[in-house]
Length: 411
Ligand SMILES: Nc1ncnc2c1ncn2[C@@H]1O[C@H](COP(=O)(O)OP(=O)(O)O)[C@@H](O)[C@H]1O
Ligand SMILES: CC(=O)OP(=O)(O)O
Ligand SMILES: [Mg+2]
Image (cartoon, rainbow, N blue to C red; front, side, top):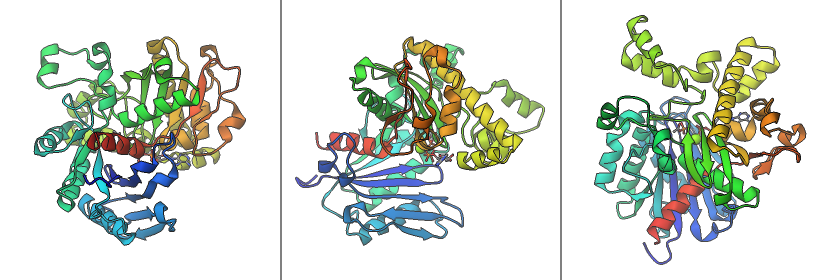
């Protein structure tokens, strides 16, 4: 790293998308990682489809958002397109100001509990974990390989979704199955979205004007993938996702919690094989399985039109969410705040209202007019009388990844 290098490129590669940001870390010291530090942000979505779309905004130059539509075959092509967009703004990957590239890596298994500079051995371990994050780790690996090929001299850092959850006590992390079998195959609950749970729980403490050590928070990360966590004094003590990102809440396309016997039944009685069951539970279940739509905006529209199927899907989603709020209240003993985050949590006011409805005896309530306010800043939506603060706290996985990456390479 040269003395002047202070930029970090963050790649958040998902199963069919790549989110990216180029940040100048000399300008992101402020608590909100002020917009001044963000030189460019963008998103490639629907990778592998005919209708792929790349949206790129060069914030650093104040340039307008550029959108390109057309087929982008795979993640390698997506990253090359991103590199070209950055180069068009004079922010190419060849810049000497680039200090490192930070990669979101979803599954880090038991080995990785901190950000890690990627070498061949680290990459091999991330590959070994593909079976337990089949939708995610392959995309992360492609991102790493492509970025390494473009800048072999630059430190590439992996920031793991699982890292924040490694503080879970053994009784929360273990499944109640035969210990020898579990240990032989490293079967345990790892948890995901940890970068977001860490960032949001810290931000929530800040919103309350308290130190993270003094606050107990339930974080509800509700995106397409969704998970809840119980964070006691800044440390994760339980989370809803498990060995893979399939357990827990009802998600856009994933079932979340299910009786494992359903899988035997599908194989023995419905004649499905492993791969078919996998696809059913990961891609054809959750909201999309229940009502044909996985976007909460569309589900909201259908409910407004009186669509009973959409309403039932919504009610199932909310019921599961409520059960986790109850469970984590018991796990924490004292709850100071419930924080809603990610695409659904930040934008869907009806989800927030319904999830908290009826929880007054637990000290939780939502004020309808506060809940209707939209914005990018962390904000309270609970009435003043409520014992528990209910908040909307926008997540920023990219900023958190950039900060962890920069801290590691500039140490
Ligand atoms: N304005 C909105 N109102 C309601 N839901 C929204 C809104 N915007 C986004 N969402 C929901 O957020 C989801 C995407 O969340 P996001 O956190 O970006 O997910 P991911 O990172 O898993 O792709 C969409 O599928 C949609 O359900
Ligand atoms: C781990 C996980 O579910 O991630 P995402 O929400 O990006 O799919
Ligand atoms: Mg996400």
